Image 1 (cartoon, rainbow, N blue to C red):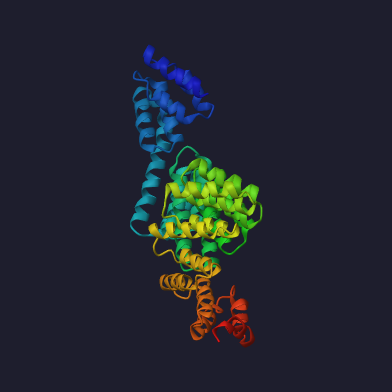
Image 2: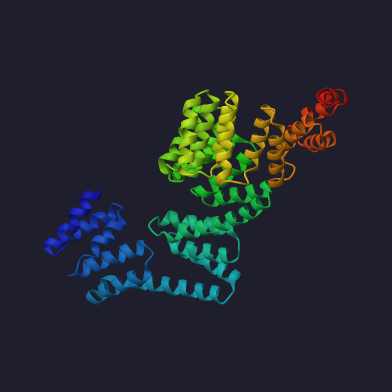
Length: 426
């Protein structure tokens, strides 16, 4: 159809005229916008062309141009188009009266007048739009969207109806974001779902809902909404990344890798996606491949300290402690406040029995992030081995507030265990 349309345009410019039957054919086959474009290339207009232009503009709800062309047709043949002119004039006046009522602030009266318009012009999309607009001004968004949708159904060619629906949907999105920022996920979900109810193609609402479900650890539900969203908007690399994270949480690494690759297909330098691929490969024991990804990240951004964290963990697991320390020191050059790196270095130094260095790094880590449990634990180990018993007990006591370290720290604090680990001090 598009090819035929462009050939018609070329024909117009070459021969200076377009057969009205071609425009007529496009109009009656439902290609209204193509018919309008082709019609506007005609310079030498006659009665039939003016009347067809009137029909096209009326279908597009462009009443000004519809009236202009009908008036031109009336000048040529008043008797033939008189009745049509009367009807159009009456519609324009009725719409002006409703608009005057609305702009004067009488919203309820405008709603009632608009309802009467719909009874009078049942198939006219502008009348449904006018009622929807009045409801919008009254903040009755349910009814506003109902009539905007009816207008869109009657006239799918005018984008303003979908624009109004999108606007109302985005009002709910803004409300949802406010509650999301307050971590009130239940109310945020209510507003995002309402936004989606108003505008079922609102991919941003789908992404927001998916993000909430991910946050509350309902990963399958999160994936469902995110996948619905990317069917509408396939260019958001962060959504593909979030989908990958969902499938990591669902223990489906192969599927996760697929979505991380799609994210990187849009943004090849998205470091978070590369990092997740490195983590998955480490989990799958593809250590060399994992390290390749991590070194790729560092080559792009030396301050991405999470890559160094994983490199340290890998080298520790392979008992390459000196190499682990080398990675840690490299990380601190570009990210001197990376408390997790300093905490890992403290653990490595404790493993090497270099307790002074372990204590130093643990304290630096805690200075950067107060009560950081991994560093407190390593500080306790270092102080205990350095015979600083009070300092060791203090570190373990603070550390056990973290549920991940509670049992281990409590074990060290048991009198018999603590005395065993510090018997060298006597």
